[in-house]
Length: 475
Image (tube, rainbow, N blue to C red; front, side):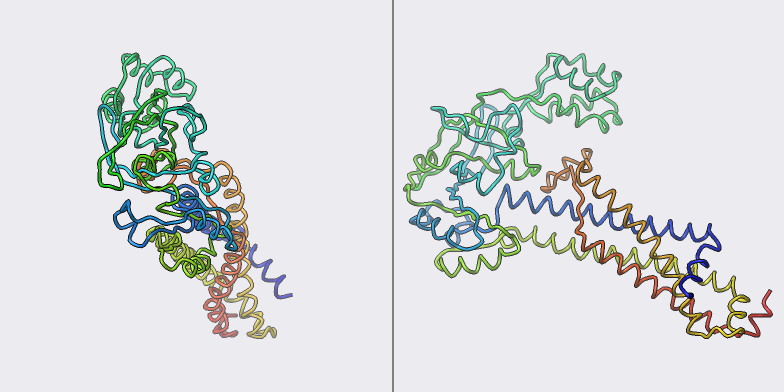
């Protein structure tokens, strides 16, 4: 009876109730969607790091990662790999040779880390091979008598391997992407021109277009003008194990894009046997074992097992390999809690304000109910039920709207193309897929109910303090 009365009381003033419910809905939706966006951003970053950059666990000689000393090698690599693969929870292992060197072209040079890999083993641990940009080649899939190198897009830009050109095909691509004709017409005087670098191309575009056009269509024009000449080459120079400078010419096997500018600029991948031949490293030795496991939550446990097996080597899991990533993951979890508390606090003040107005407007009615025999416990329960109904309806609607939006954006993603360059410099993708666990929705629902109950306490106490005789005289 109390619950039915409370439900009817909620809708006695429909306009006010709908305003409160709408504000709760918007607040819950905004909070959940923001949390989903942050979770999606962080989950994509962790996934990219584990599947493209560092994997779950790495083993190498102690102090090797301090300066990548070429002489700090692991012996009996095949036996090591077999022992690692026999550990429960380990899915695959790949072995790498790593040295520092310089990548050169005819016009530019830059310092890089040269990584010797076995392509087939790498595919079992990383998905870098699937990030090859269409039209640039492949991940060591073509047999050739030339040495091959697999490099990142940013390094290719740095070395002027990737260039920019404006031609009729590029103009057609812009039309297909619905770039306005007024903007395209400003580019037509440059048809036939080639630009040696992204900076040179960007300067020309910025001069030709207005600031608004550059902001809206600059990234589209940049992508459309992107040009790569097959069979491009670079030279790698480095020091072998005898401290003698050496090097070789390499043909570009393919170019990858992983939305991490620093990773793309820094790393060059070549075949392991080629690097060992050039450096004089023995075939049965390696610098690093990289391990993929089935469940990343078991990283610390499996690392402990491997440390016991190989006490002479350094064994680290992904949180130790990338402490900044581990720190950001922890910060996001704490930030989500703080953000949710702020949303619920705002919801609480809204409910308190509304229910106080209700109590003041219904002073005479509440006095009458008390006078005819409704005890204080029932009055308290009725006010509390009204508050819970208001918060629960708004909260449930907000959760449903959030769930629908998250399901939609989880498939399509949200593209922050205008901020792509800044995000990629920090290793984050500009195309984000929000995500939230079902447990989070259950938690939010419970917290909304608790918030509604707590928010109703003060208005309910206010109602209990009313004197029936005074309340009945209220106009």
